[in-house]
Image (cartoon, rainbow, N blue to C red; front, side, top):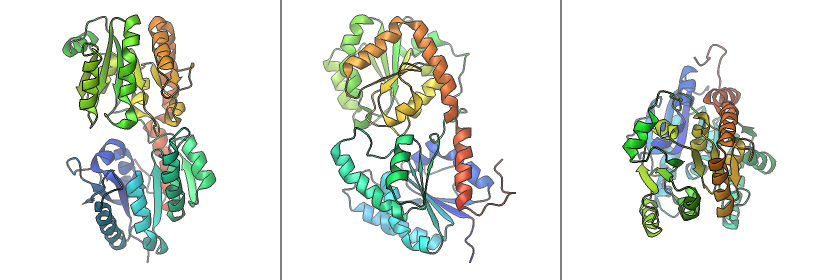
Length: 384
């Protein structure tokens, strides 16, 4: 019996879907597919393009019995759904999905997994390799397709894993509609609203306050930089569990006049308009959308050496990459761009050109090809 035109999307939360996947849902809907989603509701539970949403307890830790509950419910959903395709995202939900879909695969359902950045990577702690690598390698045998968003992950998955097929796409796509450059922004007005002097030299870091984003590294570097950039201001946009600890650290280092905690923001474009350098100290990234957004907005970037950042930045060509944990390299990179505005402008212009390959249109085109390998899509079912 032919399966209905129905797809199940599995991910950590409804917020993840809202932030990253709406253009892909629109493409699948245009092909005539009914879309279901299994997530933990952490937002409003409303995701555009999803016809039915299941709320499952996908917790951020492996050390909870609620994952057994999530697995049981997920298996019931999959067994009853008669899906043509199951597309899973993020490690824990993806692991549960591939185990729960064994029976469905025998009945013809295809299982696809997009890896938004494996937890094992060059330079990762040994424990990550010892834990996540064997798990992903084992689960790959229950996967018809693995989609990777950076070349390091693709090389590992295609060379070592047992999935039916492995693909690389240029990131999940930078949505230029979200990140449009607005040249009419009144920069001095924005600085005034934030309480910044008109001559401020602004470093901007858009990232939630979690261990992986490593805000502590930035904060502990600032006093040395400030000695050479007296008008230095640092803007942190984001929320998260480590925010109180970082606020305490800033106070202890007498940086309260330098560092501004802005919380969650929707006006990133406006903040980038007053930014001199966009920075990232992330320990790992699948790609690095915050930097991509800065590059679209013609802002020079300085970031850690990381598989995702290396997709976006060629150090010394369109930005600077510094070694993980090297405060000296970070400070030198910032100071070079501070003292050489012409170089900063050159980096920004080159980045604005380079980032075009990561635009959502290109990622959608690649995913369209991949989906059509696993879906019964007629020539008439073309996305608008």
